[in-house]
Image (cartoon, rainbow, N blue to C red):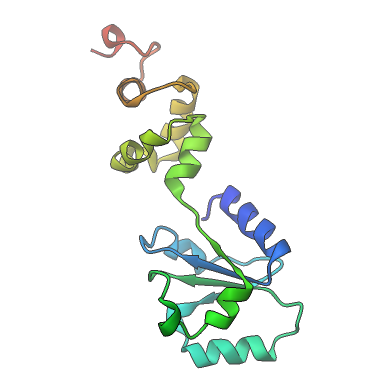
Amino acid sequence: MLNPKIIEKIESQLNKERFLFWYDEDEEHLACIKELSLTNAVVLLVEDMPALQVKLEIAKADISQKFLFYSTKPEPEPQNDWLLAYRLKGKSFSADSTQILLDELGLNAHVLRPHLKRRSKFLNAKERVEKLKKWTSLDDDADLLDMKILTVIARCDQSDAFSIF
């Protein structure tokens, strides 16, 4: 299931725009997007439909109908983009799960993004993230964050080396 913050962000963008384009090259959200049903828009998986069919869907739709275009490919060059006219009328959307995780953990150091990506297996479990939230603080660096991850894994009461080891 998609993170509720992502859904909220999508719906917020769709309140302002008729066309929203989401290029998810890492396919982070592909499984979830197929189940996604938005109250205010139609979700179109661009790879599953020929471009002409997409254009026909838009042409047949009511003028107030909104669309979320989802693609696992990179944003195409303008000369190769069959949906360029719609893309120019709309906005791009991105949902970086690492950024969402940074926000959720209350960390403001964007230098931790690659660090968190490398620890994605640990951070994929909601229960561990919830426990880690109790330990993190705004000014944590990579080493301190690793110490706190070890605290969660070892189920310690304190996040210092003596408690963990």
